[in-house]
Image 1: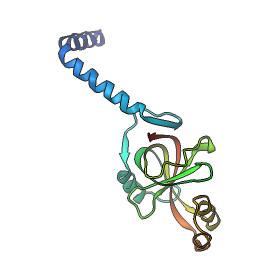
Image 2 (image 1 turned 135 degrees about the horizontal axis):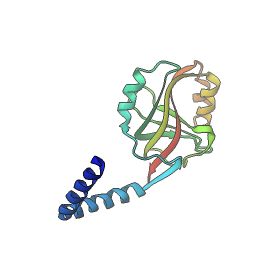
Image 3 (image 1 turned 120 degrees about the vertical axis):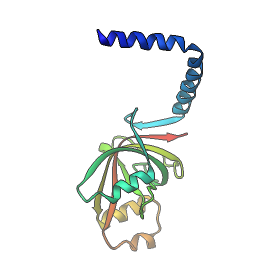
Image 4 (image 1 turned 120 degrees about the horizontal axis):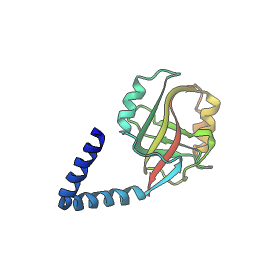
Length: 169
């Protein structure tokens, strides 16, 4: 019964604020237009708290290899696979960018999104990447033979498995 009273009072309050509602509708329409300018790759995600890239960088500082955390963040793309769009790197204010792969190799992103802002949802983690894998990624990224040959040590990597990506158009 109390729930019905609460809803009744809320309804009356909304009706009595009709003039203010038109401004709220304008804001809602503007937000819908802004959201529609985002292309979605993989699974769509809504109503997630979105961290800035630098907030995610702070989280990575506290992760150890084997730790994971589910998170949504946004940041600029530094690099993307030029073969298929099967990975990308996003600046998070750390020494190295976060290396993002796509869950189950289930989707790819466009190859021309360098410097575009993306919103990414998935699982952040820290891992160690082998020399062979680093060389493979360098080759896919279009690096020179000299740059590829210079990779001789494994590297602690800020990793991310994305279930969804939104890209500003």
